[in-house]
Amino acid sequence: MNFTQITDVRQINRLRILNLIAKSEKTSRASIARELGFNKVSTGEIVDILIKEGLVEELGAQITQSGRPSIGLSLNKEKYFVIAIDIGLRNIRFALMNLSGELLRFERFPTPITPTVEEAMALMIRHINAYKGRLAKEQVLKGIGISIGADVESSTGTIIEHRDWKWKNIPLSYAIEKYTNIPVVVENNVVAMIKGEKWFNEKADKERIFFINWGEHISGAFVAPGRKISPEALFGHLIVTEKNKCSCGGIGCLETVASGKALAAHATKSKSVKSLVEEANDEPHLQRLLYESVAYMAKALINTAAIVRPTTIIIGGGISLLPEPYFNHLIQVFNTHCPPIVNNNITITRSVLKERGGIIGTGVVALDEFIFRRSTIEQLAIQ
Ligand SMILES: [Zn+2]
Image 1 (cartoon, rainbow, N blue to C red):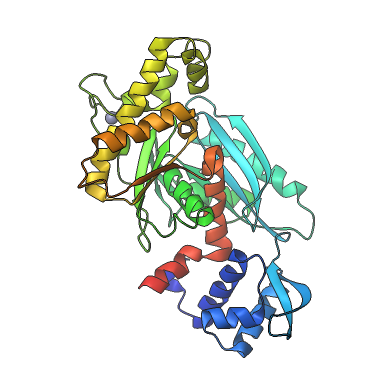
Image 2 (cartoon, rainbow, N blue to C red):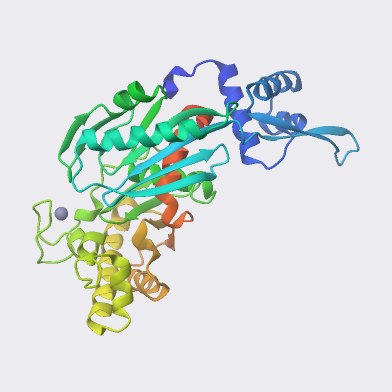
């Protein structure tokens, strides 16, 4: 179902009320009616339906400021759940998420090297069935969100192309639904991370954001209020140097000097960025390499800022957690070299979801698709 199909006013009102209750810790029928400008009778009717569905619960009577009794309402977190699956190049993460976006179970498994579609699917189906088996009888699994660093057609749940694994035109939703009988939504991983960020970071919801997923690869996408997130930008392939052949066939892409893959190759103990950061404490040349990498990232961000004019740049993904001195250097290089005409007080921050951004964002995609439809009502509000 996409938003053009939600034409029933009552259905839209139901979603607006549900989302208002979800966003507030505690509210009441009267304050919902006031805040949304609905009449009290129909608000009450819709709230009763939400209670019956098990999405909302009553908290008992309380006395309002005006001295009248009122019954508190809040989201019922314990009935409906979604499964999030974040398929990364190094790890596949699984989580069970409740309606508040809390991770109730979280597991991580190494991704098989260049997995076949069948291998990845078998792994997912096995874990989905295990999660399903652990739920109590009254707990309901509403859907599954899957995110992957690939070109994805989310309306049909198809992976159009995964470059690293040479997957093409994989009807992932269809296949997983067939074996699990649970609805599935598939999304590009950066889009999922942005959706997670917007869900949990109220500020991000109101700004012009350029979001970076700085991990094994580097990708980025722009989003502004009411705008669809389009992940087509190839941020990792901005040219920042004259040497280094990139896996894309180009020379000198940002990927070749700042991606997790490129950085990990310099570590000697274990081929990871974490190990590189530790080794850099005693090895000035590795420390220099890390400072150079963040400077390349800063310059790529300056070029991007000149074109998309963000108010905030949010950096997510594993490498966004580089120690403070490196992150501060990135901001310093950005502020020093960004032309004043471009840098209109652009803020650079790390994702509020830290290293969990991928998996939380994936769960949010499922919550949004199967329960809250928040992105849909936002688009309706703007049209
Ligand atoms: Zn490239």
